Image (cartoon, rainbow, N blue to C red; front, top):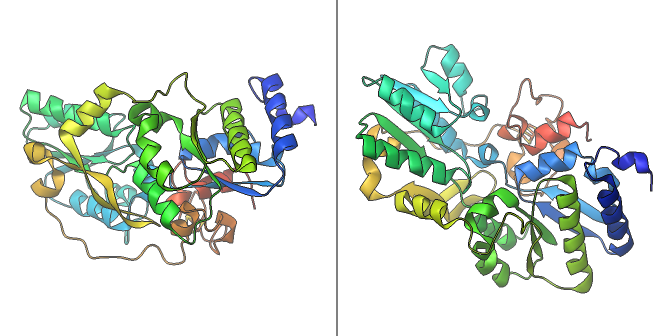
Length: 363
Ligand code: SF4
């Protein structure tokens, strides 16, 4: 092994050891999906793909929340932004995501009141300062961010804030795994499961889906050596014919997750069917605001209708998000679609697979 290949690793000796084991033990071709966008970026940043033997193919999954947000939801955000007396608040990575005709960034340039906030609490504070406006927070993310948004809704209720609203567009990871495993087009020999989501939902949350489908799964962290450890555990399972759920991130993730965070989440939200870009409607994969908190539901307070619309023409984000295609297989990659002028969300988000391929010169 060329030691200079792994010099950038924080623990180069451990990385070298893990790589040696992976190379020694991997004999049959496997396709391993890193479900989470943070894993995708960590894999690229550390150059892990180029260090693995040819038998291992890493594919990126639907783990970038901005990327999986359906076109209809993006168009809904934009329609709300055009309503009178509305201030839209969002994390920055949604700003440039193209809707059917425009983006939040373009709407802001057209004079709409759209603010980037760094937390949902920032949106609530803005509502308190602007009592004459309806302040809407765009709730996009997985189980990691949903409890924080739920906590801010509870705080708004405590403060009796009348002008704070949330578009609940959160997604749940386990139903997405189920949808991937049911798809005939998607071929996966093992999942690297997201560490941060697992901190909240716990290892047990994956048990029903992983027991229903005999595919290896390993929860792992985000250091390069965490990822290599997760890959090694998946390779060992695949080579031995095992298909179990393992936790390689037990320093942070336990069986039950974070009961306090999950309690807050379930107090405010309940599961509902949700549309994902690339995966279609997945049963119980979204989170809607419970009736008891419906006065904070932006969809009810600011009803807008958006026509059904296809994804951007020529954009293969749907297939990229399910690992069916890699970004260079999209005809627009690096040509019409670049981070400066993105056609689809997978090129916009900092965790998007197309953006990662572009940034790290993968063709
Ligand atoms: Fe869509 Fe651009 Fe990715 Fe192609 S390269 S799939 S157009 S985001």
